[in-house]
Image (cartoon, rainbow, N blue to C red):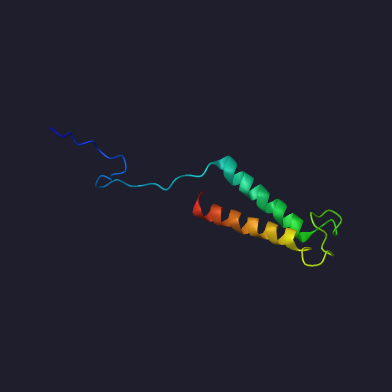
Length: 82
């Protein structure tokens, strides 16, 4: 005799599926990273504190591009709920 084992992924009729909730510490860390990234891009140190100096040809703006890319990724994660 074959026994039917209920699949935990099956949804019963009338069941409401809640989206996964993101943890508060993770959300706070994302916001902190966004603020730090914005401060880095605004450049209040007038170029004194930089990972790669802007006056280096070709690669001078790669650090800003990297920070901006990470900020876009963080915004996407915040909006999607991860």
